[in-house]
Every structure is written in C-alpha cells, then in structure tokens.
Image (cartoon, rainbow over all chains, first blue to last red; front, side):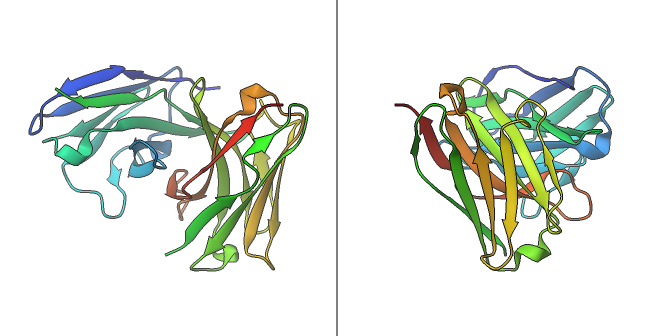
Length: 110
Length: 120
C-alpha cells in the first residue's frame, strides 16, 4: 500500500502570501492518479486538483498542482481569506483498487 | 448536478452492524460510473471504505473487506453500506462520494456526511 506523507503539518501565513504544500508518496504514483482536496470545518472535502495539475470545475486559478513520481506540490499563489482550511492529497493505486489519503496540511491565518 | 445525501442511525452498539444509505438526487444513479464510501475519524483521517459501479461491481479496502458490503438499489436511486462487527474504531463521519468521469480516480462530489458513533 502506498503511504502519503504531507508537510508541513501546519502552515501559518497571511492573506496575500503564497502557500506551498507538499505531498510525498512511499512509492512512485502515476501522476494521473494524484488529487488534492480542501476541507473546512463541518464540511465535506472539496476536490481542487485531479491528475496532479488539472483544476476541478469552478476552482480559481490561484490553485495549481505539480509534481511527479513520489513528490507532488499544491501551490496557492495568493491566499484569500476563504483559503484557510485543511488540504489533503489522495492517490489511487491498483491492483487491487485502493484510494489513500495523506494526513493533511492545515493552513492557518498568521 | 447530482446531489448525494447520507442517512442512517447515528449510534450503533459494539459488535453490531452499521447501516447507511446514500440517496442520489438530480440524476439517475445509473449515470454515476462509480460511487464510494469514505470515512473520517480523528485518529485515522480520511479512509476509503469501498466503491460500487453503476452495474453493481464492488471493490473494498482490504483492511475492511471482511466486514463491508456495498450494494445498489436502482429503484430507490440509492447505495447502501453495511459494516459488521463494529468497534469504537469505526466511529467516524461517513461520506458517500462520486468518482469523476473519464477515469478521474478522484471524488468530484460529496455528500454532507453523517456521524456514526459506536458505543453501548
């Protein structure tokens, strides 16, 4: 089973700053199968990025994803007040089919 | 746009069976290629439980496979989850989530989630 590690665990930044979140896999991940989600308290996760770098429907272009192999990055170019949340990476592997999530990075207002 | 809504008992006794349904509105369940159950607990974060296709094929997380059944009821436009022999470790918010089209292998629509507590 591929294990995902996210760093840092918490990121304290101010609105307008750039956020760089890391997701590292224990084995190489097909870049088609790497996704990022945003979750706010009391809400379900929301898909931001799929296939490493494709923004989901309605996601602003300040969110971007990159990476390959075992190292992937989510970048928020300029933090808006609504971006302070927890972010999870997720990968898919087979056989057998298995989705796994990272432990999350919390982006706090500094 | 398809909407998902989880429902079911919020409290289950240890060694009992957790039973939840995911109702699909705004479209036919047959239009969804794959629908998954994902749970979230403070101790384990987000964990994929399993999935079912529009034709009824299933895949389960190996760590839960012996206790999980996911089924489809097209007449009611819903998917069901059963988890047997539950313990406190199964306490979590349970979400149903639709997998994206075209082999996206990510979840582009989620229900609001339902909290299930395992306790006597």
